[in-house]
Length: 81
Image (cartoon, rainbow, N blue to C red):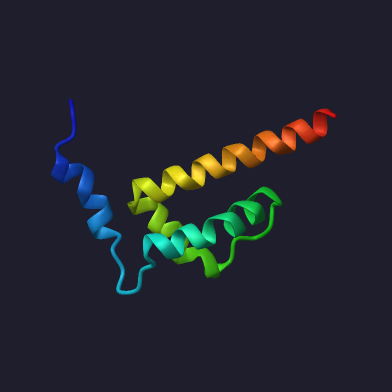
């Protein structure tokens, strides 16, 4: 059974916080977050709002996933050399 729009939006509405970051702030943080993530560095509370934004914003999540995919491919190519 297909979810209604309301059922799809409810988790995002319930996850709304008093303090959030904008898409431009998220885009600015994406490279540093992905590099830290791929290096296995602890993702501190500094990125809590970033992760929360990714959970709500499809555009920013797609940007994050694309950058992560590119960096993973580059790392794989470097190991193959």
